[in-house]
Image: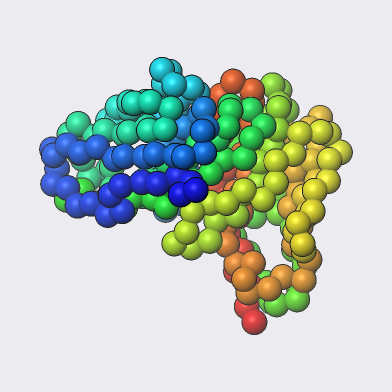
Length: 113
Length: 111
């Protein structure tokens, strides 16, 4: 099993450009998550999908949109990138909402200039 | 938004020292408490998922205890080794919502 995979690994954008971060898991998990990591802020939840067909906002959803394409895939879109969105983005998944271990992808390092 | 507090923010110990960290969380709507280990340039990995008040879990030299009534958990590392250097994250699990992580405790172990 590959676990949780993310593409791309690195990306540089100019302010105002758009892009989509891709995430896929092969563990048949129901719940998927997007977090961002910033120095001194730990991991902050952007959006999550409790199950296929549902999405909910997390702590810092502004400037992002998500799509749960199917059970395996959960994408994060930046419509108009801003320097404040420079971060490392982690996708994660777990079997269900409550009481299960969460598995993280390798991360995408995004720089917005 | 959950208020999850971890202390200390960072600490530095010598190889062989034992150490412990604290995670404080709201005790309402509690379902489980997660601990994760996060090494530099890697992804967080689960250490423990704890559900019962008074629960104690152990993995090698690392152990954790849980008090759901007062809303705290302790993580202990016995005989710290350089490979234990990492950031340790906790996250309370409230049924029906996503994990919200504390800012973590960063441990540095010198040989």
